[in-house]
Length: 178
Image 1 (cartoon, rainbow, N blue to C red):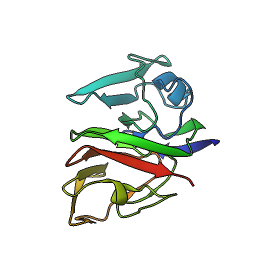
Image 2 (image 1 turned 90 degrees about the vertical axis):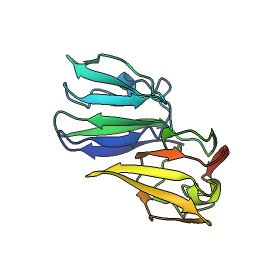
Image 3 (image 1 turned 45 degrees about the horizontal axis):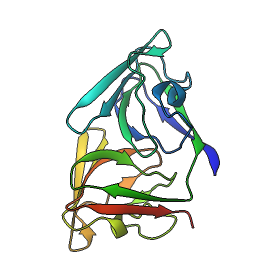
Image 4 (image 1 turned 30 degrees about the vertical axis):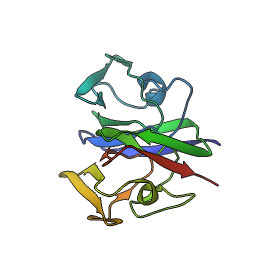
């Protein structure tokens, strides 16, 4: 499946996004495709810290690779719309360890933490109890913890939005369009 996803961004507002499609190179230059203005800042998570990249004179100070399903922070210097263009897989199995990672859906799907099964985020069906999801939005982070099969906060994850997940144990996050 080939397609595109538009995400409007407001100037000087920080967003936690995730690359939802595979464009072949998946670096900042190809993801940005000229849409983000100069002085835009992108931060990618390494697992222990962040790598910052600033756009100046139409180039990025660090042309970070952002694979499909990987999250990143972006703060545009002016209003802009980022258009993710690429291919979406039909199915995905994402192996997660019990350490924190900044990710997003590898399929262009929005939904809630409780969704389970095909054509959903399937976080509810894939994550073990005591898993923590942190979603970033206006005002900071909102955490939800899975306990006894239910989530403490009923978060909704929009298409192309990233989040932090810390599984309680190694697990596989499975998604499918079939």
